[in-house]
Image (cartoon, rainbow, N blue to C red; front, side, top):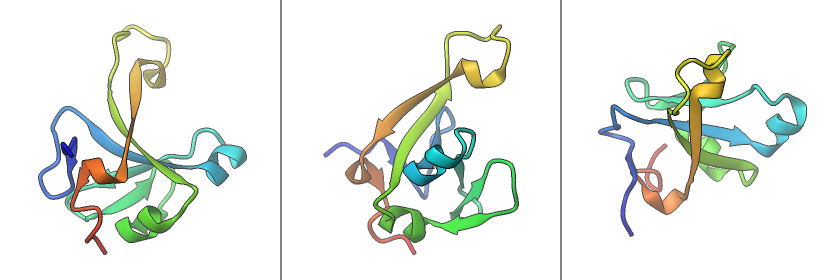
Length: 98
């Protein structure tokens, strides 16, 4: 298996994002962003924090790599982002994270 993201040495060109199917049903704009310095995920618009293990163990959560898109002149910044699904096995350090 090839690793596409390392929790301890994150890429400078992509960000690890977690989306929960329950959040998507509630509000499309809720996304959890991995903050390497804190080793946890932060909700994009609130002071809510989740550990890596909490999101990893939640069956409703899917992980994605967020990268800059091909539309830098889009009306909103969200339109210039690409989300690529990433499997648990492709994230180095995820299995043993707390």
